[in-house]
Amino acid sequence: MPSFSALALSTLLALSSTPAAALAEGQCQVLESEVTWGFKESFRSYISGSIALGQWTTSGDVGYKTPVFIFTGGEGTIAPDRTGGSVAFEGELLFEGHGGNLRTSLGHPTLVIDSGRSATLVFDVTGDTMDMVSVSADDVEFVTLEWSAGDESVDVATGEWVVTGAQATLTGAGSESFGTYPEGEPFDPVDIRLLVTPSCLTPGGLNPWWVAGGVLGLALLGGGMLWITARARKSPEQERQ
Image 1 (cartoon, rainbow, N blue to C red):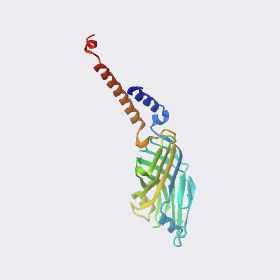
Image 2 (cartoon, rainbow, N blue to C red):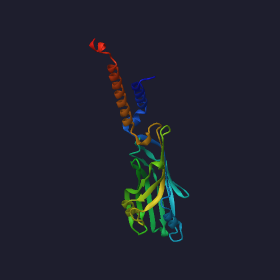
Image 3 (spheres, helix red, strand yellow):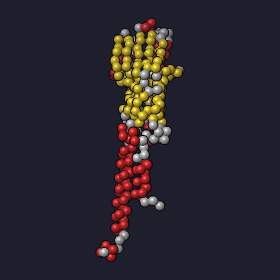
Image 4 (cartoon, rainbow, N blue to C red):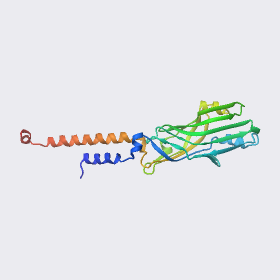
């Protein structure tokens, strides 16, 4: 049976075979991306209803399939433990109503990963709000997203990370640029699916360097224990020789 040190060392060598670029830069390249969001159902109902008599249109990486908007084709990187990173999309989501008096564009969506359980959706916001206020603001942190461990899944082998039903909350900056709703207003939940380089992600929010360092430490500790055991087993005669 292999010794403890041999097993630990073999594990360390296996970890070191992770793609060098991912470990060197500390990021995983996003190969596929999809963010699904209904925005706010009550607002969509208002826009398409008999009062606003409006509509919404999409372009670029932003599409619509009843009852949700879907952002696809974004590019970026995320940390292996999902504690940072961003994915940027092109295109826009445009709301219009009241004969053109309301016209608000949410352009260049960006998903910013803030920590292991939170993120932010960022937009360039332009147009006129329902209060007839003209807006032109870039990089608006529009809604914050939060989820629990049970809302996400990670497949290390394929590089797929999925979050289902993240809670979306309007920020102060989002309220100021969009109007209509106060800060803290709940918006529709968000689903996230990112596919990165296989084997780049770590399970349970572990950083690969921490894992490798821990295994190396165990290997050194195991080697020291074996040396101490061997010394203890020597007879007094052997020690005197």
